[in-house]
Length: 82
Length: 232
Image (cartoon, rainbow over all chains, first blue to last red; front, top):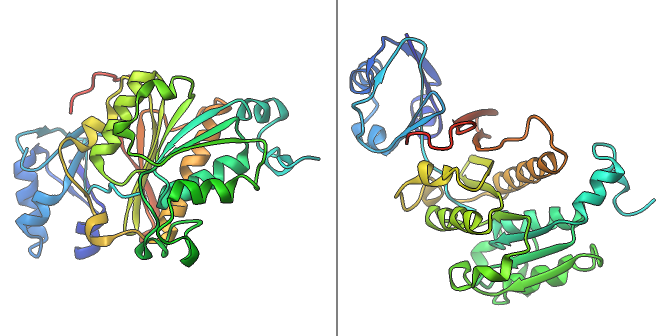
């Protein structure tokens, strides 16, 4: 299983903090998430930034990555203010 | 007893003396910058260089330390210098009312640390490159709404470049900048700075910590420790 955590807008808008999903491509994981959270829009997914195992950063629409069992995904948004 | 007495429960006299030798380049004298400048001067240092082109505007008053109705239209760096110098007369405070991009990096050859108080991902990446040029770390911070992040970026790690890539702005565009998130993140940055000085094993080096004040949580987003050429 892959642990998926939601921070910032997705968490705030949909009141979901985390879930576990079957391993597979990021694309298939996103489809699973959308099935479980039907109110989640494509735009919210596209505007999120995705971190994989605190190592890789996936910006908009780079969903070809394959996730293994034990991997961790974070969906969040950037902050750049000061 | 001296003015640093209350620092010295968590740092010893030798470490306090090390703080007092540091020369720090702070870019941005706004939300993060005001809190950071205040903190550095109270911790004690040799020289604080502050760079910011702006004057105070009415919309700054919700958050920017040392802004007030009398300071409107005055240069932020001059207001900060005037306010900070009496807090610690031993600190040399040098200010440039300018954008960092227009200044020669040779002006800052002597600094020990660059500090990120700027408000766009692009300039944050410029500071990261300046850190590489000067071969000194960058103390990074950023906020938007309830959320913020911070960490120390070593020269060569290209952490912020990996992180932000080409995005022009983040949540601050819509959620904006409340005073408390800036205060929290600026003070986390100062805490990491002190940990860096005293070689604390838990210093956030080449890592970015996410802070969520809405849900009272923190989490490391990215960790480039031991992975200087990590994939992005």
